[in-house]
Length: 181
Image (tube, rainbow, N blue to C red; front, side, top):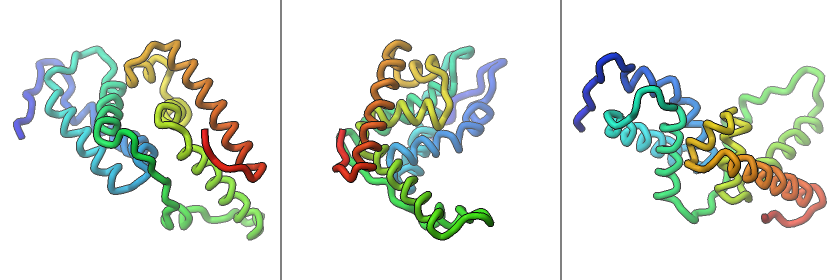
């Protein structure tokens, strides 16, 4: 693969992209809900971004540009697929209970986490991604708008609807109802 030339006075691709690696992987993991797919998606994102780096305009939002590439790659290769969040053993191992917790409280906390993960899984991708960008990645509305290529007003309304849908799913789960948006 031909590596784009360094632009005069501009940061290199590596300087801009590498600090975003963990954040992009985290977002990809939530979108794909599979470790191997997330790794492939991030690799694909970095490959596409490196190839197109010469077209990136200095002074624009590099973070939003990278997230947009990741999102578009996800949507173009996986549109319509419903995936599940696996419960990784490694995640459970890192959750050591505090000294004042009981086995019952640990089980309740895990059940709550699983309920939230299932509710997120049941959300349509457009709602899940906007919640993740806002709440997990802590992007501003403007950054989300640039990432998703939608107006800021659409970000706010979609975020409102996503939160409402998530609340409804959590209520249904709490009352023993079936998941679904």
